[in-house]
Length: 219
Image 1 (cartoon, one colour):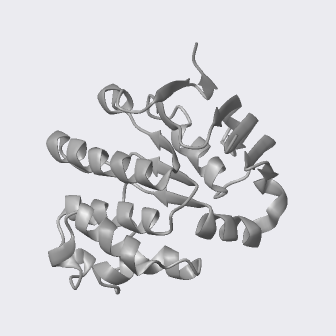
Image 2 (image 1 turned 90 degrees about the horizontal axis):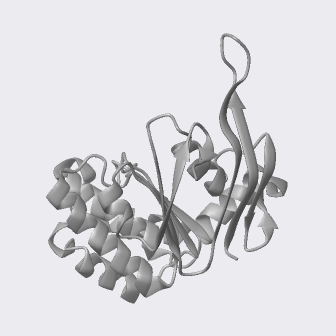
């Protein structure tokens, strides 16, 4: 099993005391599997994704990647895990404005010491970015920026891709196109994919799905 979230609980401070966001959520993801996580706004989807990425740690429960409990790694160990074994694709793209497209695409792979020029060239071509490699993020459309974010995530050939509403800022037609490219490249790398989405239509394109409601997996 590549990813296991076991009985995850998480609360945040509120005016009336701790406000629970996740209430005993468990899920697992095998190597090569794609899983959509759906749910209404505020259901805890993004928080759960952050747990899987090691960006936050649970109040109770375990997050295991390849059998390693990432809460036990400390901040530096979790950062190393994100550089080498997993990649996160955010809704807001999070590109580095001072780097051109080519440098943004190579950024994570360089940090991980796993830059592969032939694979990056292939990813660039598949994402339709060949003519944009010398441009900066501000010179790109939203769809082009999201393609760069996907390419950056996959250039490192991660074991696990975590995508948080990756087409949330795109119109439906462009979102469909971007999802198709992402799924094709994820399949080529053999990575697993956990994608948060509010769209039942997009969720239906992944291998399986879970629905989160009020911090729990709905039946």
